[in-house]
Length: 378
Image (cartoon, rainbow, N blue to C red; front, side, top):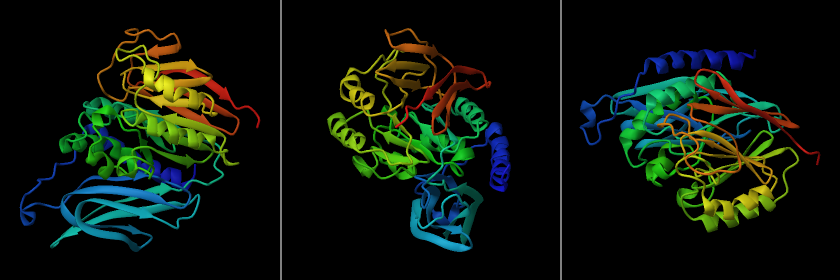
């Protein structure tokens, strides 16, 4: 085991104990007299958009403050006074571990969170694993169970298929969400797709370190590459035609030599046996593109169950299993269904240059629907 893996696992193990105990960060008192309120970093830090040479970190303080990062003994990205802080680190080295501390100050008060660590991926990373889940919404205790099970799989990054919270306009909802993901989000990059419950709220874009792309706030849809996988993340709530042209152009580009796999994610499943059923618009607009664009997996949410459907050679996986109340499969017809289950859990994907090894894991570490996709030689 590497020193980085050991130290990060020890840090995350301590945090996991706190998570299991259900400790929740206190809510900031908006509008209160700052001199009478104890300064806190009450959400974050949250890591995202991690590349071989850069990283994006966000955090939130309960009252307006000056914020910055301490990285390698240097003060980086100082800004404010503000409650939401966003710092992009540039000029990092590939395959290196970085330790950082988040700082905030106002008046004679100062606080810090950390140190925490993250590791930049090598651009030639070809053997690794990631996890995906979604629809965490309004039950933080159930969400905690899924996160605890997911971290036991030791992923390098985490995908979220949308409906992070019950109402993206509600700051209270985000205050329940961030303490749960804090166990991993300070060390592992998290990439979300926007769900219908986010309601395209400004808070979704402000609080999360989402990569730059297109649409509202420049991050409604986006693509990113990690190791030998390229991911395409869309907003299935709106502006479908515009994203269809964007996706068409993206998939028409030749894959870089180091990219072996293409994976897509959006919230509404095109095929589902849950009560919401499949989405005919997505079937018409996006399925032909991914099925002819060398995409292997598509992750979705929305229906609160696990289901894998196969159409046009693509595996469409519904992962509405992150904590929202579960639905039973079979409420809607889905002739393309290969496996369906009502259980809290996540999926783990082990990536190699020639194979994707896939499994759905519930909160008791039971394994379901294991399969392997073999890449055709190109």
